[in-house]
Length: 344
View (cartoon, rainbow, N blue to C red):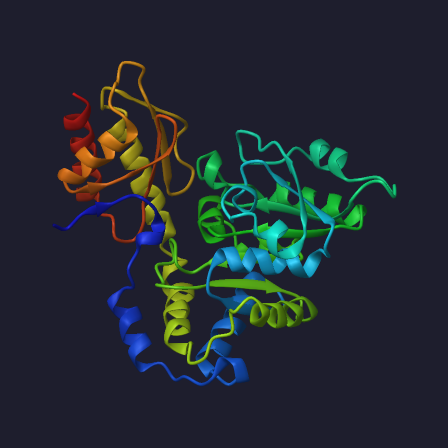
């Protein structure tokens, strides 16, 4: 069966153009630093985000961890959101592998961290306290509904960090979605950050990989730590080739995914038994089950699968659907129809 798969944009498979580029990629040994396709990808990623250098890494989780390990020493502290991916969904790597202490503060409904909360979380110069070294934000903010954080807000966080001698990292797994939704150059959106991670393997459709960008000094340190974490790869140009297609072709079409998310939202609003939240600002549609629905989340997912639609729940009686390159408007209509049948 050909499923409509809305579990995440991580389910995307490479396009025919990507497969061709991968097959024809010029490669070398990247640990020796002589894979020309990786070098080209890293140069292009750095240029697009307005940073000095970039590093190709196997996953977004590794990219975020590398940033934390570069910016913080053992026992030092990072301020992050209580709904942030690095705090909730990265297996405690900052603490387990880096000895870095998380200081979570509340994510607001719009995905932001209040500036006054960040300021209050910065530890005083006291031998009894940890030392605050880093502030992290996430854009788009996944668990707040895929919401977009704007340029002015990002500048304000960057200024606050600078005034207090802190580094500033953006988990930009879907930063190109944020830039597309705002209608701004991604370079402008990440300008205040000391480092940024973004994924190639989500809305940008590549099969594997993420990018970490920052200063030359930052990337040199991250490169060494990547090796320590087992992330040194050999003829990885076959994957970097797909990433180049991502940057050249997929970054300019993300508004299509956002439009389909809005269409899906409107279609699901007509389904009895669903309680939809705010109109999606990027490629995620969140909703909850109405009180009278007695089916469990798993029962709903199983019934949807029988009808050719793959979905997943994000919490108690809550679902998240994610649009992407391989979802068309026919798939949107099929999804709404399947929900109506399951919940009738």
